[in-house]
Structure formats: structure tokens, C-alpha cells
Amino acid sequence: MSKKKQKKEKITYIDDGRTIADMSGIHDRFAWAKKGTTSSPKDIWNTYWNAVKMMFLPMLVVIGFLVVIYLIITIIFWLI
Image (cartoon, rainbow, N blue to C red; front, side):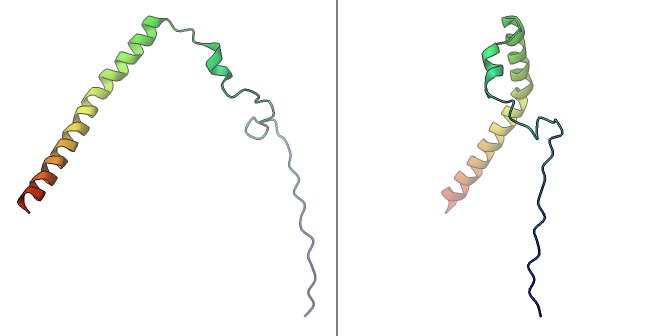
């Protein structure tokens, strides 16, 4: 039995121009936040309230579920 060392294959990386492969062009992670927004305050306010209205019913369902679980656990420990 001869133990020959096999040569490891040398990996060659090729830059295909995609940003995921080449992150050298990224200097400031938060540059987008410094630019600000072009939206008007009214648009921002409407977007906020539309999101709040959309999530109001799911929030009530979750709160109701938590109250029911709390009551069940309270009753279980009250009976013991």
C-alpha cells in the first residue's frame, strides 16, 4: 500500500460582476438612511394609519387568545 498525497485542487474565484459576489463597492451601510425620503408627511401618515387599521383585528385576536390562555391557567391553578 503506497500512500501518495494527492494534490489539492486550487480554487479560482471569478468575479462575474454581481453585487453579491463583489461587495467592495459598499462603503456606507446606512447611506440610504441619510438621503431622506421624497414622500410627503401626509403620505407617511396615511401609510402608518393604513398599517395600523390592517393589524388591528389580528392584534385583538392575539390579545383575546392570551386572555383565554391566562384564564384557563388561572382556573387550573385555582382548582389545585
